[in-house]
Image (cartoon, rainbow, N blue to C red):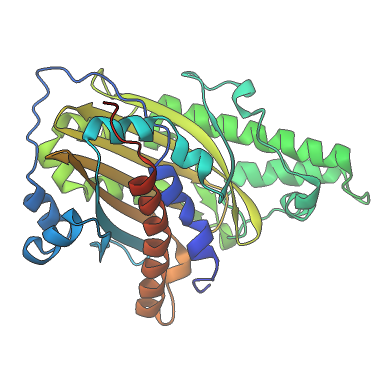
Length: 356
């Protein structure tokens, strides 16, 4: 399957909106062995040219680069921007959730309890206008139309038998919605309990399984600057839920429209803030369709009243493989960069000035 427009712009645009979302930061123990990288060191790591790009970034330009990709299915980009506000104001605005609430590509979202419960997913719903998606779920089978485990496929197939020969009316829509909520709850609980080891694989054709865990582990392993400079944070990301007391963690569900279809995802955020740096990692450990997994890392460095924000994204999707693979990757990167640029522009524009 080729990379489809507008899926690259809409399906992956949520990564931009969620990177500027609700962030809650935990206290940092004094024994945390952190070494804050310099601005130029960070630029070089992300593939920028400090001599050529530093001045452009500090002048307010959003500069983007292709990032190092580790698999044929991965799209990776890096962007940098200077926000003309001190780090605490940038963090405060990000923490407020304005980016998530104002992103018109996000239909709805919900923050999960410390221990995910059924009530957390009360906002998950399919509308009457999305009845086609509901009917497709009742016809679910192994393949790439949905990202479902073998057990989840069988669950929807079993539900379909109850409606065999009948139109899927409002009662049917509610039954499918309830089943989908239960699926999301089960996946959230499994991830909360076991982290990456708790992710159920997706059922593909010919009884093949696709495990997004491998992609997400690879995305973590590729974050070598985090490993080098923020080892406790890196270990918390790698070993969740055995993250220890260093970080603050948050799980949420998101509803997005992708390729004209409703798409639900589950995400995990890990936060870190100190006076001289802030980090946010956002991991999509379940995505309903179109792409398989995603990891976003947002880093902030203060510089003389300005905050330099670095954004990296690794998204795995089979839509960039096959014939003309290099072209598909290039087109996908450009579309992702355009989507992220929009949200970074909003970040620059909307962070309020400090009170006098």
